[in-house]
Image (cartoon, rainbow, N blue to C red; front, top):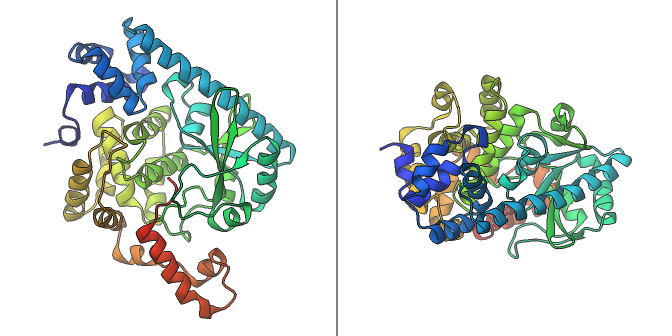
Length: 390
């Protein structure tokens, strides 16, 4: 049984998958055939549950079959994101005035610089990257633009405040727009995953140096290889299936299709040096199987984990289910085992869970090595019992 058959089962699931393929590559004949197998109201609610209703609406619009309810979904998201991007552009202008360059990450960067169809880019927040040396000044600019410090998730490892953000990698804000709320993450660490060692994570300075300008705005985006690396790691941070779930895989699809000359060997070299081949493999394999994302087979072969690890991770993903993102996906023991198996090796797992004393001293503000054991115990407890922002 192939990956598609393992993860996709009903006509409704097939319909969503077919609609999520990038606009220029979507198979409208197949979508039309699947649409005829679905009950209208059930499909609408199913698409909304997966935060994909505006994308499905766009495909039905192309077929001339969008009802007013579907049309409203597409129009609402296009309007909502246009308002949010106005706020982002204004923030980028204000940062630029202070000589602080800013990179839009993940779906915000994709929608701003790669895939211009806003109605097909539903998203919950914007993540922006600045250099660590600019972080405190950037925070002041963000606050001056009307944002307020806040967390979307009540239970999180992160601590509120610019000082905590300077130590840990970033912080979160919200801004009330006319009829919407814009959530923003200001980061100086591009990934900050619990299973990615800070010692191997690329620096914001390096990423900024190779970033690309977006015409008509002061916002920048990552260069193609690092952009793909970043969204692959983000998908893995969500365990491929946790909210927002399915639509996360469109990030990989849209970047790969946007850059047909992407340097795949450089990509493999980067993820190998970061010890994240296993995590990245499924971030590529799932959209390749479901969305037809043109990932070269030899690249997947170079990244594929051992048979035992592959079968455990695939079985875990299948049992958790690619659909219904708000349902509980893993028990805590299963989640810990799943996360541990994403590491390329046991030694990488250990060194990530227990980073260098230098990192721990800075992260936990330890002034004496005598306090390190307690900090390591605290870190282990956080990793086991608390969630981290995704």
